[in-house]
Length: 199
Image (cartoon, rainbow, N blue to C red; front, side, top):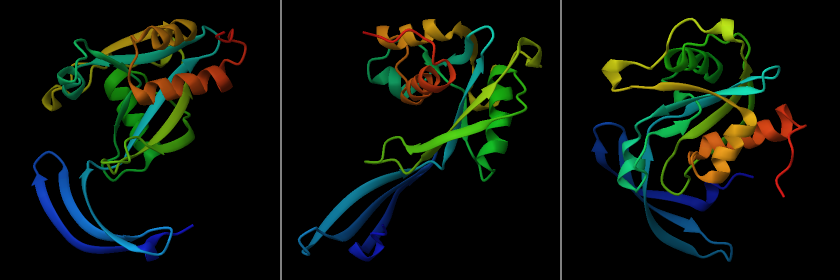
């Protein structure tokens, strides 16, 4: 259902255009009772992205990464963040970009990827839509050590863990990244349905 007819843009101001784009927008929104209400919101536009969970059904393992995420650090996470490989699309198709990103970060060259859903991860302020993928891998698919791109500040460690261990890390609070939790829960429901269910 379109809501475009209920929004009237009145003013847009760019607050920052350094790393990504931060804008302040003033608009009127037609409320459910028909009245128009003036509102102001800031939106952070960093482009859309993609993320992937690599999994090995036979060995019951998944591939994750560990890296510095400064915003998480300044909000009390005094550790490297454990995540699924991810990156911005940079105008490429999600399926194309995620193949390149996962090889840059983990060294694994995946042949088949499958999109399972997409989601707005922080719709109160960030415009990004994230495309979620899964893909099977085998140890022989690893072409390099990965680690990301040093010039972009990346210093990424690669983790290969059992799916049960990864889910236990979520429960213990060791894995705290939203996209990673979502893909691990998807894996528990759809890729490894024989996992014991939490009580």
